Every structure is written in structure tokens, then in C-alpha cells.
Image 1: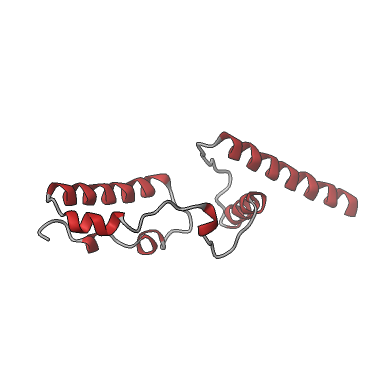
Image 2: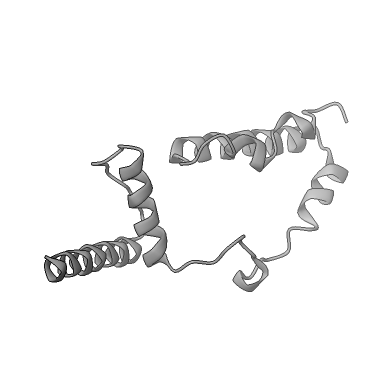
Length: 124
């Protein structure tokens, strides 16, 4: 068509790969790129292209998603904190819109360090 080329948006892996930590602003920027491209396709009435994008986007259920490895949240947050410590990035603040997730992660972190402290006291 005569609109924005589909290739003008980098692939997800290309866009996010250089970062080991992805900030919300970077996600928002990528979202904006995709949004603008869709609007361009709509404005240019490129219905064939729009249909070819929309058709394969059937609802995804969580069992269809396969990550390289599945880990419980408790291990992920501990790994994350240990990486931050290793990279000398502590203290830090992590934001989440999900209160339940925040509480779960806080509990996991507290339990991890309580267990670690208990083990250290027992070995002294």
C-alpha cells in the first residue's frame, strides 16, 4: 500500500532485547508505535493489511503461552533482587499496578530474608 510500511516497527525482540530490565516508558513507546501504525492503516483504508493482522489474533488463553522457563513469582522476585544487588542497583523502588502481586512479592522477600537470617544465626 501507500501507507506506513509494516517493517517500520522493530520486532518485539529487536526493540526490547538490549535491556535486561524493561521500563514502562519503553513499553508505552512501543505501544504508541503500533497504535500510530494502525491509525495510518485505517486512515489509508488498507483493509487487506488490517484483516491480515486481525485474523490471526484469536483470543489467547494462558495455557497457549510457553515461556522459556516457568518460575513461581516468589523465585522471580528473589532472583530480581539478587541481580539488582549484584549490579549494585539497590536500594530501588519497583512499581506495580497489581496490589495482590505487590503483597505476594513483599511476603516472598520477607520470608526469604527471614529464612536466610535464621540460617545465619544457626551457623554462628
